[in-house]
Image (cartoon, rainbow, N blue to C red; front, top):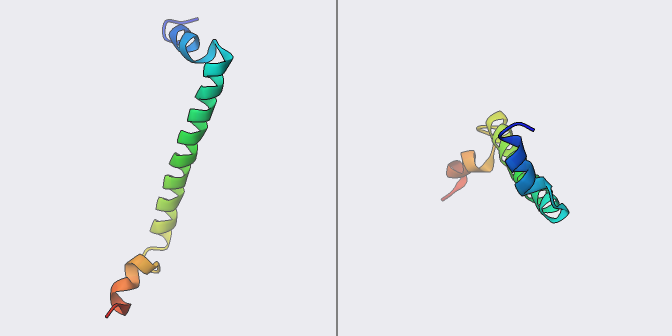
Length: 60
């Protein structure tokens, strides 16, 4: 193994408990990132039609 892969393997993937924890943390980070990206895309596609954009027209 190369110089950077071996320490990563020894820390994260050698034991099954740390491997499972790595998968759980990675999936949580992926899910949050995907959620933020998809919300930003949705907001940019629907700009001007969302409540946060038109709320000032209807408030007293």
